[in-house]
Length: 215
Image 1 (cartoon, rainbow, N blue to C red):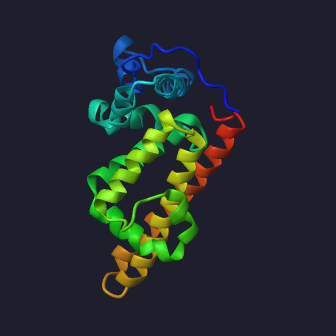
Image 2: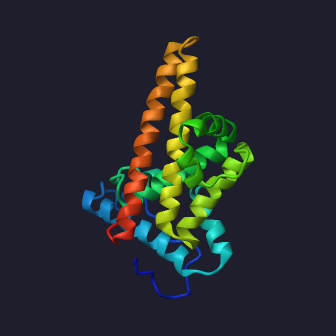
């Protein structure tokens, strides 16, 4: 079983230093090893702070971290890390959450179209019925909250299942779109494939977390 960090005094938010911010401190391009260390350290601090706190307000702030820091800051920190690592997993979870919050209608349409092709994953994702825009937004919030106050592996599996359903829906919608707009259909197909890869990575991260190997 994963060892949880001890202590109740979680910081209000961890200190974040993106590669760009690091560069401004000394006027030098940061060492790649330092960038890697910062990425993994901030991811560990973030998860540790959230999981060691019993204050729901802390979880709420962590779920809304993009509102406070901006998605670009998280991208600088984590987007270049391996997909099957803690910072890589967090980047995908936050990016997915941000997409759903910004485009709930699109997310709902993709998800609804995919349910009939991925009914088991639909159950694992755990979205309320019917999966309208608000239900999909609530699901994204629930998954991200689970990183900090539930079983992180389950949160990763739910996110992976969500991605699989959405990927199936995008692929189906691409087939329909192909009749009218082949270029748009090709873009949808590529996005469906990319999201399927994301699902596989998140599910692999869940297995790594359970084995105490997600670093």
